[in-house]
Image (tube, rainbow, N blue to C red; front, side, top):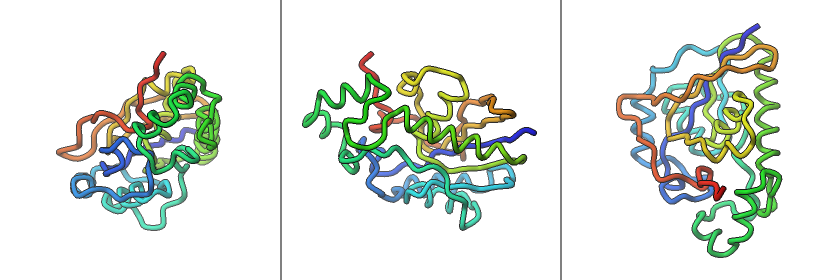
Length: 206
């Protein structure tokens, strides 16, 4: 039994432009326009999921995905850093940021560690794989990156080397807990190019 899962990153938003840990903001006008332009470009799906954040819900709606999508994994739980920019956090807690980037088991913000994020995403992928057919899910970029790390059998630190631009589709096919990967492709005629990075695309100091 093979499951095909397409993970779509949300359109561009003010939080992404500001390198801000998402505070629930909506897509900006460019993000809305680009997601709307990509509607109709997705394959038919047996099941549709979306992360609970505003930008994922709006992206799913603009892509024309059915309302009432099933819940997909939420973004990284970053505790007291939620809503702040990476620059602000680095200025106030430089040692904590260094620990967060260097140690996959570290959670100095009081949320979940990178290892916990990956484990949560893997558990969802395994659950999705219990049923055959095609899955389409609009999820946060860090969820895509965690899934890629797992699919490739890469060490957790590889997470920091993966860039997931807005509005790209990354496809996984799996059977028996083993996943193959098709690298992300832009959706729509004028999909955004990779930007300078969000807090979840920060470069590792290693």
